[in-house]
Image (cartoon, rainbow, N blue to C red; front, side, top):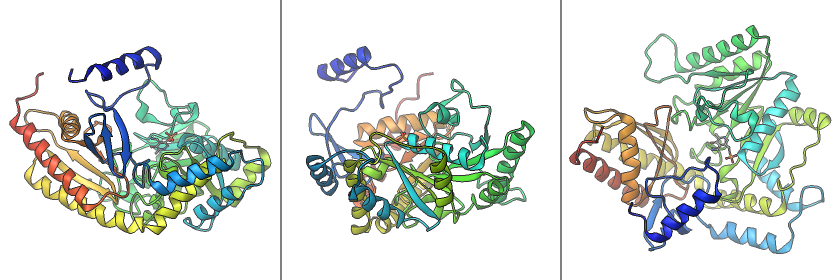
Length: 432
Ligand code: PMP
């Protein structure tokens, strides 16, 4: 391989001490040494444009967040069982970004813990167990969520209380609108649960459907489905781990774009710009019902350092006008990618919102769409741009850069994708 002796030694150490469940990206794994803004640098100081990392939402090592973490870590780090201002400042600031019915917060360390807790709250509040998710959903690592994450594959069977729904394909031309089709799917899932004697606790949706291939349009298409779950006595949980915190631009939260009112919202990934902090926000009645029945103590969740990190992120998003910038740059990037589609028949569709963008590939005579997608990810890495894939067929390019991505970075991405697709066509046909 093209790896040098040092990286080969690291690979060997990994094989020895890390479990087999760990997976690396790329045929030749990347070994970054430092990050700054939208760039990662390797040992040879080669720069890679990070068009994939939604965790470092303000850019790698954002100085305001780093300073907030350092300051708080040097002063005090305890837990949520003492009085402390930081957690309240953070909770109030977070709630100010959400519609008023969402009134109370519980902090966790990961998105998985947030979704797991959201499901517990929903079960407690409804007295029911049933859970409805999309066909390629991913919601987290716990047993309860793995059983509701069909994207993990057939090796992880779905729970007997879990039903899946298909997302509407905007291209379908039947008499129903995408919103009606989606609502009908959720009604079918409710009926199937009922036939098995199970009442629904919740409809749990990733507001951008990241692992289903990034499905953003038409905005508003989930609204009638939310009515269906409410009529059936279940709650609507918006999983904003991917879509939230201005990823989609001005709507700030993905559910806002769909004009719906969740009973519970979960968030994580970008919340601490890399520091592990996540949260569940819920309607007061839901939180109170849960609080009366249960105690929740998460050793690290909501500690002062985590809250200082999250508070700093919320401050920077507002101070730097991130939602508007995301809206503008995202549109610019989608336009650039759309122009590429006219030059490269391998590009089937460009879709997305804000800085969460999908390029769906189309098969050609030589390669399947998935093979093109894989070759593009590798080719882009060779050209210094980091990206990945999504979708049931693994044939959709997932573009999800830090929110501080600028037009100049979009230009680099589009230019390198142009080169990569041209090289792919000019290169030798794939070995079969
Ligand atoms: N929900 C969604 C939609 C996610 O994409 C993820 C992580 N990929 C999670 C939940 C779980 O978050 P975490 O990895 O922080 O546990």
